Picture 1 (cartoon, rainbow, N blue to C red):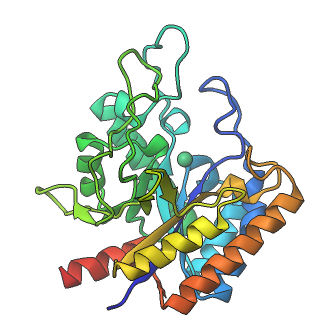
Picture 2: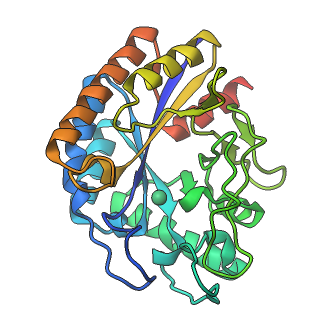
Picture 3: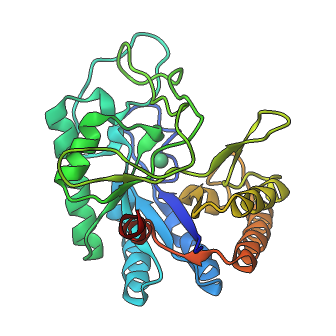
Length: 300
Ligand SMILES: [Zn+2]
């Protein structure tokens, strides 16, 4: 049985999370640091999917990386939105007191539609390709968003975090909360029964049997062995795919609270090199998310 390593990168601004209000300037210096990551993926023949935010979709360096990689078939460009920074901007009512960043699900249906349309169009213009994969910001997805994705011709979404409930993470407006993925498994499934089908391909998150702790295929500073064990576990259970995730800002020294300097980034690359090398050894094959969705549709 063939198995695929899906590499998803939430490709977004440097300080998207630290801006205190929705109208502050977001910088995109981390795009320059993505070439090193792309090179590593190409060393092993893996095909990363850059799920790209609006501010990165209009960043010249990111556009260069994307276009060059697309020419070689070495990467995929997908969509990722953080609703507060996705035109058209629209003011929603604030929650009093402490609040989180707005989820896309908090906006009126017409605004959700306009935001996704604008993002898709911007990505298509910048990268000169069709955009068919999506991940919601803050792991947010609902039926309205799925309908819009289907209408816009998306084939696959990868917002699902199996076993994780984001309900207690506040949004911007009163009564808003995150998406509950706690009952979902690490298996693909179709999100809709009407319109063009959109396949959900979850991020790989498994419960550790002894501690109940969740293991993600997502680098932290000290989880190299955990990720390698997780990949072996996925392989042993004859799963068809493993989905890795990371943020683009985490590849820049100081771009995240985890990888705060160049030394830590070098250490991250050592980890990534070992992980990808191990995946290759196990026989995981390369696939962008959309190609995986097509393979799945053809075989199920
Ligand atoms: Zn994001």
